[in-house]
Image 1 (cartoon, helix red, strand yellow):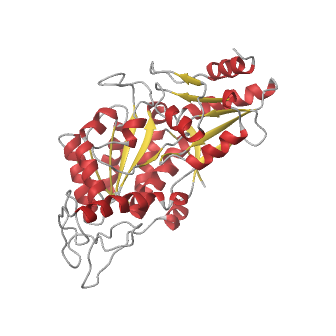
Image 2 (tube, helix red, strand yellow):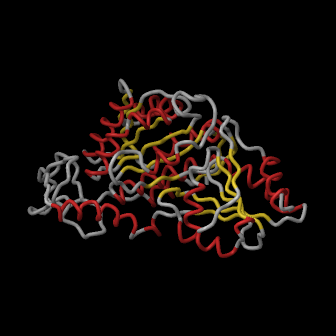
Image 3 (cartoon, one colour):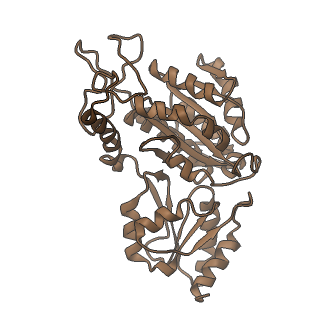
Length: 378
């Protein structure tokens, strides 16, 4: 293990380098700019490509183009930039182009609170473009996880041939901590290699009905077509109803049929808990302090913290709903309930909710007071 002192943005940049990212395109935006700044200095030194584009749209277009040549590619931004990237996120989904998109959340809507924290992009990350797409969205909840979840994002992008969104927030981005991260040699053992097919009769989408397309790196072997239109196995456009249906169904099944490879949840002091806090992102550390303190008061509190927000861990949430009464489950978010509805849908219950949208992180006493109210039936 490597021990260092770093903040979340620094660790995202380091993870991108260690995960084999060789192309970055971006545009400065608070509170994610440090990722770009670090890579602008590091990548030229190690013969990797960095480019600052003229805007957010150009950034994701460049990253998509680099990915098509077989490079592990990344762009990063915050909420307003995600809005600008929406059309090309759809392009990458439809054409099945792997890409990591880092979104360091800040207060919104619009310009909002650029230098403050938020979890306001959760629903946007589930449906970041028009049409039907099955997104994979990872949410680190500690500083060290900004590193490990970034590595995982690259592996999932290559495995499922689609964009993967890393959903960080301003608190994680700018909080420096002493962290332990895996040695580079251990990371390299875990890296997923993109599939290729150099057979003479190769067709990009001639795959099983729950597998991603196989896109050979451009300029290596047989040429093929890329389109954002509905397409057949040859990747050429089609409007045949059965083929259009099959295409989107397959893109959903390639995720839904392999949830074990995608889902990740942390349960903290869960087994003997009477009360459960459901949270994610930087709220987790405040919730953990609150749970530890409440246990000293005799209230057994545990935490359910998804690291993969989308697809949501429905089965695990269902299991939690069988263990805890609805009145004893508290959902805590820095938004107006963007994940609450999904938790309630999975659990089949209306749940207590604690919300904050003023750009400030939850303090442990705020969570503790809400649990005490629930305990006393207030």
